[in-house]
Length: 317
Image (cartoon, rainbow, N blue to C red; front, top):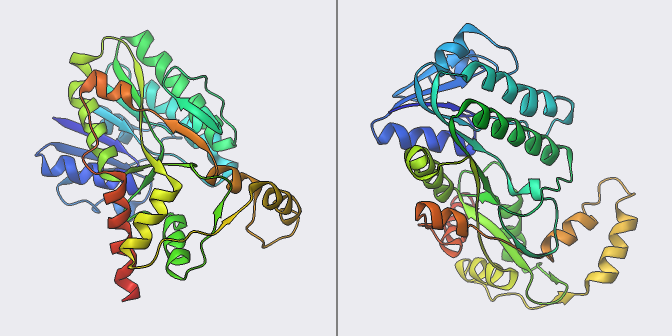
């Protein structure tokens, strides 16, 4: 199978490329950096920028059985729309008639910031921040393209992806706080932590790409996630650190009021959005992915947290 991947230098993209190489597939990847052309042994690098149509991108796409579109701008709002939306549009235009199927990596962020209930693929999109808005628009472009051109395609929307190699340091910071005995719960018991271990995302992407032309007669989107209570998450991390699980708890209301003031002071990380996130009771269901593809996560959320603690311990002795 010929596989073409954008975003192969990223946390998820690199692991996806390495998995396909291990499976014996012919892997192509697109990079803007000439020095990265040889970063993956066993894969073919193509120099190109998805925001600028080029002959190299034509060659990268031509004849691919599956095109995984993972490239995205997540931090710089000045170029976010150009990369995530215009770049996707360029890639779609170049891919017409040249690929077998399209698999788009998106995010559950397109559903906004609900604080309770169960989110499914039927839930209304309600993106909140510029990144989520750009991803929702890119998803719309892919849906329309695949439908109009009768191309097999799907969108995979993971919740918070984590793993030992993750560049985002938030979970490692949480581990550090728990290790120092400084962690405090916020609000009532029963808040939900929605995370998905990176290896499960890789497996789901490959599952979709291999079975998509046969099992899905219409373009679909799929959520992939796992969850546990905040209490369970913190307990697993604490026990992995050989620490007693923390019990102290702060009321949400007064802390959120304090955050309203703190947000006006530079350098103070206390934010209402963060408090809302750690007290949310929403669950992202991936039942549809299981029903259509028979897909099940191979790494539990608890084992994923244990792997993360093991990684955190390496430089800390």
